[in-house]
Image 1 (cartoon, rainbow, N blue to C red):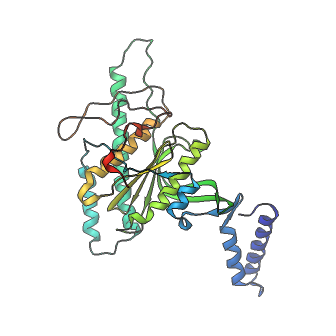
Image 2: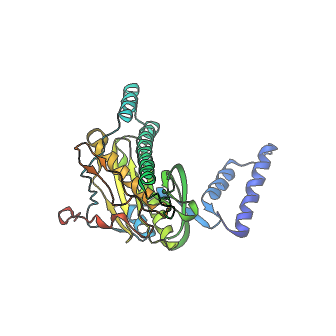
Length: 330
């Protein structure tokens, strides 16, 4: 949107056009209406806006001062969570009742909704279990304070993300809406660590990577600007069938994991999503680190992502997960 008198002038033009429309004046010109609306929508109070649809991957790297890592993002998931039976049944029902219908954005959204909600609910319940166990097994002496649980994370739909950038030598306001975002602090603190984009239909997950990465860049660069020590952020782009995982670390490097398919690698997908949700929970404000439960995986061995359920804002949980030499992207 233009600033100052230019913005006021544009508002006056729009007002006159719509007043003319209401009075059915012959002065109404359709082309003038469309031009004025286009100009209104493509500007903001801080200057012209910029959307992800007009950007290339290289544009995003440049705008948000990112660089591609030279290695694949390896997530050590030796212990996998099974896909919950309830989730499998619902997804099977969806497949059954939509068989033969053309895939579209609504179907993709339904699948992604169910998978995300199932994973987040499971992690939140696990934290409740850990917190309850810590409270019940702690020292009961009056001088020992009760453990403070992490603040609850929130899944939000269609979150607007903005950040001032310079594009082609011009100051612009980058603006977009993330389909899903996982928050552990307020919007004023830009306290989110996961951005999810849904593709329009099956077999198009890769097409949403640039948009997803740009939203991750907004979060990362905003937290850097605020002086946050932890600016790490994660991204998922999915069409409900294929899942692509991205990560921007504290050094502004972009790491990409090998894509996974739901029909063959459901356990890996669920475990990766829960891995990222666990990081969000650990990043939430709390004063008491908690010991994890001795969770057993399907092999009967203890399952544990991290040594503590809480990790301070100064820590990037990915710093201990360095890529192997044989996973170079070169």
